[in-house]
Length: 205
Image 1 (cartoon, helix red, strand yellow):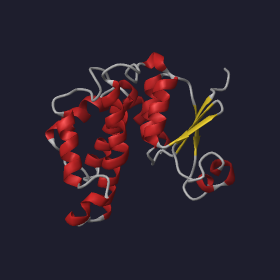
Image 2 (cartoon, rainbow, N blue to C red):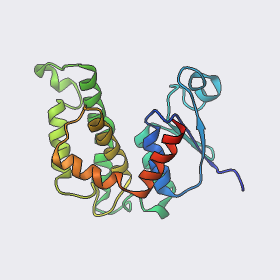
Image 3 (cartoon, rainbow, N blue to C red):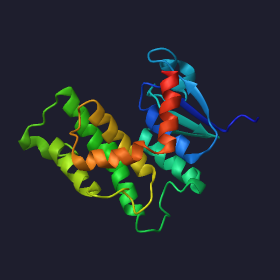
């Protein structure tokens, strides 16, 4: 069997779990390279791929992509047959980009600061991109509402990334288990590709 042209660099105890799920959704063959914190992740061969010395990353032919949201968006476009992104000129493309990068920006920054106990004084909230933690959660809750998916009526890479952020945050008590969040996440984590990804990473961990 030929070597896949898609390589995935990860650690099962990392945000690489998000990308593993996305890869399983594409159905494309890929090779996995497990990197260890503090050793191979900081060694010269991997730093040539990601100078930040962090996972995940992918190499697709000659193209290297880092950052989970960027990898999810890239894979959706690289494997259009999987239907993981709305067509470029569809009405759903705007919400797709909006919520994918809302989760990569305001949501991730907000819950990370919340977990670290970083408190932004109300009078300085204009200086941070997310305003306040509650504002971020309220905004996302309103976007999800009773929806099954965030961008139109089909599952997309935005659901992989936003859902992963919510699932992780709720699992570790960093995000409130609001009814809209738990309902939305329950539908996503039941997907066959998500279950396969969990089994693979669980075995590797």
